[in-house]
Every structure is written in C-alpha cells, then in structure tokens.
Amino acid sequence: MIQSADDIVRGTVVHANICVLGGGPAGIVLALELAKTGKSILLLESGGESPSEQAQALNAGEVVDEKLHSPPDRYRQRVLGGATSIWGGRCVPFDPIDFEARPWIDHSGWPISYDEVERHYAAANAWCEAGEYEYDARLATPGGMRALLRGFSPLHFDANGIERFSCPTNFGDRYRARLHSAPNVRVLLSATATSLRAARDGSRIDTLDVRNGRDCTFSVAAEQFVLAMGGMETPRLLLTSDDVHAGGIGNVNDLVGRFYMCHIAGTIGSLRVNGTADSVWHGYDVAADGTYCRRRLALLPETQAAMGLSNAVFRLHHPRIADPRHGTGPLSAIFLAQRFISYEYAKRLVSDVPPTYKTWLRHGMNAVIDSPSTGRFLLRWLKTRTLADRKFPSIIIRPRTNLFSLDFHAEQVPNPDSRIDLGSGLDRFGNRRLRVDWRYTRQDVETVATSFDLLSQELATQSIGHLSLASDERDIETVVRRDGAYGGHHIGTTRMGASARSGVVDRHGKVFGVNNLYVVGSATFPTSSQANPTLTIVAMAVRLAERLGALATRVPSIQESVS
Image 1 (spheres, rainbow, N blue to C red):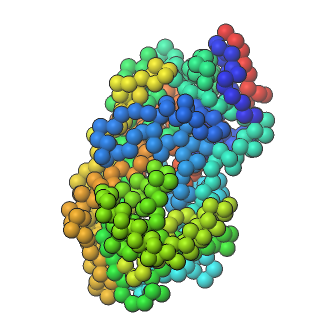
Image 2: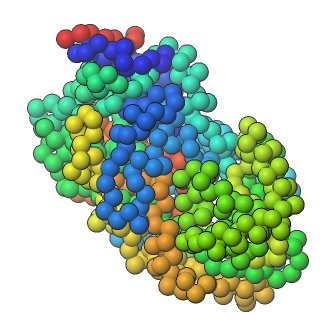
Image 3: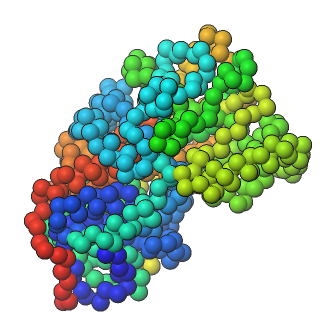
C-alpha cells in the first residue's frame, strides 16, 4: 500500500523487517524484489507522487565552484520515482575493465568482479524497459544496425557497442500499482529521514528518525536498513548521524563523501565526413521490440592500458546548437526556444556560447530561411516524442552538409579531494545542507585530449573525414571546464572497498562496522566507467535483494506502536 506519512501520529514507531530509504529506481526495485520473499518491507520517500516545492527545497545546498557544478537541487527529484522522473532513458552496462585494479588509475578496482554484476543486467534491462539485454550492434536489430561511418575500421575504438533507451520509464508511475498492491510492502510518502540512531556500541542501527510534511517526528525500527538515497543524500545522512559515531556513521577513516565523481562530458570538435550523405548514420535504429538503439565509439581496454587512459566514448552529434554558423533552421529554433527547455537539457544544448543580440538575430534568420526543415522537425518531434509512449530519445538533425560535432562521455578517475560534505546552511528540519566541492584532475583532461587525437588520426588515415578543433577548444581543459560535471550522475561518495581502509561499504554494500545498515546505488561505485549509471544501479539493487532476502527474519506484516 501507498500512504502519506502525514497521517502518522507523532511518536509512532513503525516496525518492519527491512526499511528502504529512497523511492528512486534503486529503492523501488529493491522493495519489489524483496516483496517476493514475503518479508515486511517499508519504503520511505521524502517526496510525494508528484513534485512539490516544499520537498524539492530539501535538496538545496552549496557549491564551491558554481561554474563547474550545478546547484544540488538540480537533476535530483524528491518524488516517487526519483531522478527517473526527468532522465533521458540511456541504458549502458559497465565494462569488465571498470572493475579491475588498474595500475595507471589510483584507487581503482572493485572488491567484486564484473561477472557478479553482469548476471543481473538482464533483469535490470527488464526493469528499465530497455528491451533485450544485447549491446552488440551486429545482433541488436534484425540484420544488424547501420554503420556509424561506412568503411571505418578503427584500431583504438570499438564501433560495435551501443546504447539502448528506456521509454524513458518513470519508475514511480510505472511501478506504482505494483507497490500499492504488494501485501507486504508499505510505501510512506512525505517521509524524510533525518537521523540514524545507532546502538550505544555503534554496531547496529536501532531506529531511524523521520519527519513528515507536518514536521511531526516518528521512528522506524527494522532488522535491516538500506540507504537508496543517491550519491548526494546518502553521505549527507551518514555525516549528520554523528551522536554515537563521531564524524558520522561509516566515517572512521574520513571516506564518507569523498571520491565524488560525475562524468567528464561535453561536445567538442568539428567532423567533416567525406563522401555522400548516406556514408554516415548518426541516428537511431529500432530493435524488434521497439527499443531505440544507437552506436558509439568506445575506447578499447587495451588502448586504455597501453596509454594510461580512463574509459571514454564518443557519439556523433549535430553541430553545436549555440553557434548560428551551422545555418540549420531546427537547431536555431531550439536555441530560440531555450527558455521552454528544462534546465537539465538546456544546459547541455545551448550554454556553450554566450548569447548576444547578434547571435539571436542570426538564429532567427536561420529559422526563417530554413523554415520548411524547422516545420518538418517540429511535426516529427510531436509525433515521436511528445505523443509517443516510447519516446524518441534525443534531437537528431542531419546537417545540411556532412559536418558534425562529437559528444564525449568519459570516466572521471577517483579523487579523494573531490567531495560532498556538510555546509553551513540548515534545512527546515534543522539538518545541515550539502556542500559540493567537485574537482577534476589532469588525468581526466588527458583522457579526452588523447582519445580525441587518436580518433582524429584514424579518421584521417582511413580517409573517412577531417576532425578538428575550434580555436576556443584547442586547450581541452577549457572544454572540460565549459561543460563541467555531468550533473545527474553522482558517484562514489560511499565507495565499496575490501576493508574500511579503502571503502565505506563492503562487497555486499554493508557499512563497515554496522551490522544492519546497507547502501545501494551509484554512491557505492568505486569507479564511474564511461556509462550512465542507472542500469548498473538497478542491477546492483537486484543483487542486494538476493543478499537481504536470505538474512531477514520473516514476520507476518508491518506493525505500528505509539510510544
């Protein structure tokens, strides 16, 4: 059942076998997987079934360098479904090399193998509604997918890897009925966890303090607690809960909140492809089940090892929207309509060139001169995106000539100085707000620069096309700084380790030194990979459900008492 915590009486103690904090994809999948065991599951979500300003205000916080990182209340949603209420649906598995201890990347290596996660990817694909678990372009569609660049056989890149796209599925909407009907699952909305109460010896969590929308406090007592609150809110709660564990729960070695990673991502370069228009395909193919699939160029693991690089991929992209010299009506129409585009997408689409009166005028001329193309684009977008159940994933516009740019999406190496901690401001419940100090390294910049050079050389050698940099892009670090942290990917802040010296949680996600407290989600990832994290988050939730299903003692139902 789904209820509002506003109906809970002050001082009530809610009992359950397992309490899951956070109603995003990790929390919802974990709760529904655990429901199969017959154990009593309590799922707490700070927001409601739809967004509210009151709930969203709890995400506010400080950013040390606002040019590099978005405000912490952007990209995160306090609502049932979490960030899946605004995500783009891209699903990509991690690679085997991501789990390895790589000598050229400090603090790399997971305490679990790739195979331990890979066996759950098929289930994760199903939960995400991303079609079949098949990420090879030669097998993903009948007869294989179209070539990205005809005749291109790169030595340093894999051209057969793909991305698959969810509807995109809002987990709150999609799985609300299952949560409501599960007899042993109780969802409490408007339930904000404010403190974990540890036993006197610190070895377990006795209760959890919760505030509802009316600022009434109640408690939760459970055999197991799981934090599925994301890479920002999880360290915040652990650091706030410091009455028994000095410095915060799990923070004996000052690791909570450190190693904060996003992705190094942005748009770069100009690629003029030789040949006719049909020699390049930068759009989507559709699998037999209707899933949209798209090729990209992935840096090979042997190249990463030989050159000391982190993981990275490139996607073929339209010219930079904000630069009106592309002369393309639909792109200029998007620029002119930027006020009507959500922050999360507008930041990437139109923010890389400072707007001027002359810029706006030239975009207006493009939209008028190329108005037939603009009209066709808008009609197609209405049909395949706005009105479709499975939405067309992104803007794909073929430029007038074979001139493209590149999207890059690169792994950020673990850096203990990049961190999330507690700031000076307080939220309405009196807890300290977040403070974000995101930092990149020279190694992150070198991965983008070297990978770009490798691709440029291979394209030229094989006479595929000419890849070059604009004058304001020749210092790759300026490109990295221009786009900054990829806002929606919050990784590594309660990293998994072989011991408390190297991590906050163990190989199962259990907080070191606390016997009944677990973390699930990208906060536990020791490395960030080239991939968007959602598919792996869901796979790890399925994996944890297996573990917890064997641990908790069965009780007939969730119970309540009033102290």
